[in-house]
Each structure stands twice: as C-alpha cells, then as structure tokens.
Image (cartoon, rainbow, N blue to C red; front, side, top):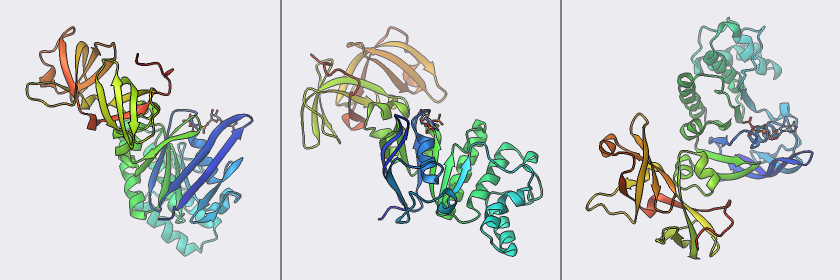
Amino acid sequence: MTAHLEIISAQKNYKNFKAVDNVHLSINKGEFVTILGPSGSGKTTLLKLIAGFESLNNGAILLDGQEITKKKAYDRNIGMVFQNYALFPHMTIFDNIAYPLQLRKVPKQEIKEQVYKALQMVRLEGFDSRFPSQLSGGQQQRVALARAIVFNPPLLLLDEPLGALDKNLRQQMQFEIKHIQEKLGITTVNVTHDQEEALTMSDRICVMNHGRVEQMDTPERLYNCPQSKFVSSFIGEINWFHGEIIHSESGLSIVKLLNGQVVRMKAEQTLKENSAVLIAIRPENIHVVHEGSAYTHKYHVKVMGKTYIGDSFRVEAMTDTNERISIKLPYAATKEMAVGDQLEVGWNTADASLIPDDEAKNDAVS
Ligand code: ATP
C-alpha cells in the first residue's frame, strides 16, 4: 500500500536546536495516527510542518504521492482543529462553518447544503444562528471540527483539540471525533500528550522524544512491546528488571538478571553482548505464586506498601536485589497482605519486553 501522507527525513531547526530531527512517517489512507510525546518533544512543530505553517530545513512531505514541501498552507487544502477553537467570535455558527467554502468560491446553495450536512455530522442542528460565545466548550469544539471537514479535505490535523475540556467531556468527544473520522474515512494526524487519548483513539501512535520518533506502532504493540526505556515508561506503568546480555542471535537473547537468573527472550532489536538491558513488565503481568502456578521466572519480594486504585490494589515491593516493583493485584489477593510480608511473585517471558538500558554505563551485572 502506498502511503497517503509521507514524511521523509524531516528536519526543523530553530538556530542550533533540532525541534524535529530526521523524522520518517508513513501514514495510510483513512488512518488515525496520534503524535504523542512530552512537552517540547516536537509534536506541534511536526504538525505545523505538515500544515505548511513552518518550513523544513531538510526533507520532504508528500500527500497523495504529490510533494507539498514548498506549497503554501492554504494550497495544501488541509483541515485543522486547534485547542483554542479559533472560531470567529463575530460570526454565527453557520458563517463560521461556511467560511472555508466561501474562500473556495463554492456556490451559495451548495454552501448551505454542506454546512447543514456538517452541522448534522457534529450533532449541532439548530445551532446555526447562534454565536460562538453562546455555546459550551464541547459545542465550540464540534463547530471547529465541522469547519475543518466541511470542504472535504484529504487530511485532518488535530492539535490537542480536547485539551481545554474536562475529563468526561473529553472522553465523550474522543468517541465522537473517532466516529466522524471513521465515517468520513479521512486520514487524521492528532497531537496530544494524553496517553489515554492516544491509546483509545488511534490506529497507530507515533511516540516522539527530543524531536525524534522513538516508536511508531499500534496502541497494543506500544503497550505490550515497547522498544525503548522511554516508551515503556511513557505509556502506562512499568517494572524494570536489570540484566546483561550473555548471548544474542537470530532474534533470541540470553539475559543474566541481577539475581543470577538466566532468561531467554525474543528480541526485536540487535543487542550487543555484555550490554546492559532491561526486562520490562507491566504491573498486571506479575502474579503471586501459588502452589501449582507455572511461571517462567519467580522472585522473592518484600511488601513495601499497598494502595487502593479503584478496580484493584497496587502493591509496591522490593526484590532481594533492591529493585522496586509495582504489582497490580485483585482485592482478594491482597486482603491478608501487610507491609513487611515476604511474597513469591512470578512472571512469564511471553509477557515481558527486552529493551536496551540506554541510560546505563554498561556495567550493570558483575
Ligand atoms: P507541547 O506539548 O508543550 O506543546 P510540543 O511537543 O508540541 O510541546 P513543540 O511546540 O513542537 O513541542 O516545540 C519543540 C521544541 O522547539 C521546544 O523546545 C520549543 O521550545 C522549540 N520551539 C518551538 N517553536 C519555536 C520557535 N518558533 N522558535 C524557537 N524554538 C521553538
């Protein structure tokens, strides 16, 4: 499949600072991709490069196979929604939504039809003669969305569109935007630093850090198979067991852990012998060992504390090798548990990921 939106070696510098550093992205038609990353990681800059509000220092951008790198923003014909709505306050909702069509010199009757269709799409029929100040935040954001899609753009860019809304409304709007996006089949690039929003809305997520792409993957793979320390800790909670590569060949690595255990794990990346690595495991994939339970690896740990987290308990524990871990357990498993208790916990290599410990000095295991 050829990509609908292709970003090739994109580079954006502000003086000597690389805000976007050698980014490659290939997005398919109809895909919903979220650019996720901490503040300052280059998300908005990348979106501005796609929109044409900033120009590249290096690289190229292709839309539908056509190079748009040097095209002016207006000529790119892309729909955009920003966090602060950017509605025209002195215009009615009808006129706000009609504006992109008027710019494109669409005949009056067609404008009317398209605006009412867009209003229906965002469930705001009957609001056409109001002004933006007479709408709630969620309704204003729906108008912004209607204005962005009314001219049938090939690409929709969303820059933290739900950032100003409270949690419940944000979740409802996530669902609505996703529904409209799927119905229209419009290729969409969304920017957020909200992990939950990225996981629930996206076909794929591009995790950025320091202007670079750390990993571009489906939400499931990002959560279950993170490829770097940064990605493993940025999305969800994670435990790390430190180790060292003993041997690595044809996708299989043999790792010696701090407690001397040897683990055989699939590795998607080439890892050097003797290099420091981490075995990353989600809290829900570490279990209390009972008679007869089979786990590939078992640990003795000491309970340091437990916290109620709504649907379960988070138990903090310390291994014999002083690695602090967090385990998610159901209420029944923690009822009798007290600080200072010794526990045996187990996990399976199939539930863990092997990643390089890029912050280590490569002397983790003696
Ligand atoms: P946030 O989540 O806080 O919006 P972001 O990931 O969207 O962050 P960007 O706005 O893309 O980050 O900024 C990336 C880096 O580039 C930041 O360090 C920022 O200070 C810098 N930067 C952005 N625009 C400019 C500019 N016009 N001039 C100089 N530096 C800039």
